[in-house]
Amino acid sequence: MKQLLVFACVLSAIGSGSYAAERPPNVVFVLADDLGYGDLGCYGQKLIQTLNLDRMAAEGMRFTQAYCGTSVCAPSRCALMTGRHIGHAAIRANREVQPEGQFPLPAGTVTVAQILKDAGYTTALVGKWGLGFWGSTGDPLANGFDHFFGYNCQRKAHDYYPAYLWRNGVKVELGSRKYSPDLMADEALDWVRRHKDRPFFLYFAATLPHAKFEVPNLGPYASKPWPEPAKKYAAMVSRLDDDVGRLLALLKELGLDQRTIVFFTSDNGADNPARDFLKSNGDLRGIKRTMYEGGLREPMIVRWPGHVPAGKTSDAPWAFYDFLPTAVELAGAKLPAGLNIDGISVVPALLGGELPVRPYLYWELHEPHFMQAARFGDWKAVRPAAGAPVEVYDLKADRQENHNVAAAHADVAARAEDILRAAHVDSPFTTGTTKKSKDR
Image 1 (tube, rainbow, N blue to C red):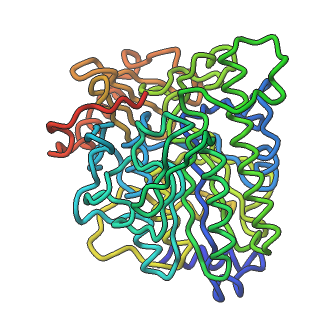
Image 2 (spheres, rainbow, N blue to C red):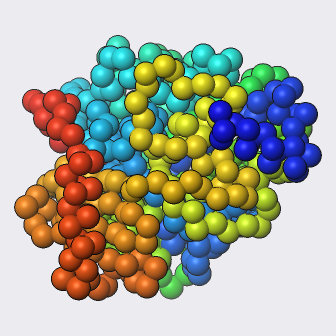
């Protein structure tokens, strides 16, 4: 209740209280696939053109210490959808189910889409799901989404010129060679047009710029004296930037600009063959499938004209599992009774304020082997493998994680051990007969 009162007071202070009472905001969450912290101009990128996302940052808020759910696709998305960190989440690794799909969310899972749907929102997922095959307990239409178009299976999503996509459980045969990101962006825009008159939640889980690296043309990079992988990756990032620009332009055209909060981020750090040339992860250590900052820290831009302060940069640390309670508060909804989540609402930070202090942020990974990480204050703990000594880094002084100070700060290392032990709860869903996904 206190947090809701704070939210109302801040809205009132910026002259928006009356609107909030009339209609809750539309919520759009754009998720890139394997985009690195340093891949956008507004995060220091010098070679790739991202004019629309740079403008989005200038018109909204850019977070410098926002984190994904973990550093690989399916579990990171599970954290986003369920509000639970990976020590508690049901999906903790990419596990494939033949012939098409991944290990499903278990029965009884409550997603952010389901809560918003129950609050009166119409909901859509366009892009990549990866949390359960059709007809399973992880079917997106059984987890709060009214509409789906794209790839249900993340392995199939590696192909940018597929034979078919899915729309609401029905195969859409594509016939001639068609570039799937274009089709999915068009679908997202068309869906927004058709649902502009009531509150909506759009989860646009784009597949760009994940491998394999296919793009219709190299655009402005065709004549660059760069390695070919760098040209292709840059063209894919700029194409994603164009899609975001089209979405933002449509919101303005429909008069929904001030009625829609848009989040943009990526599911994990970059791991492309040109990552060093392009500095895809900025100056951060690590890549996808590591517990270092380059695998976990993501670009995060939030835009909501008239509400989220324009041109502001925030160093408030938060993670994917904070999105569920944040969206619920924005919608004026309530968490279901008895729902256990790890996230907190970051609405105060979105509106220019401070986040409450929390004990820690936590991540774990189960591929290629078990590893853990936690952040508490400016301290970062990493256990790179089961049974390995914990590493400790002072992110305020050493965000590149070059200097393990565990020996010099035995008390901090001991606290880290306690956190890593307490945050992980064994789960029957982390093992089984399914094969590890070929998602790279």
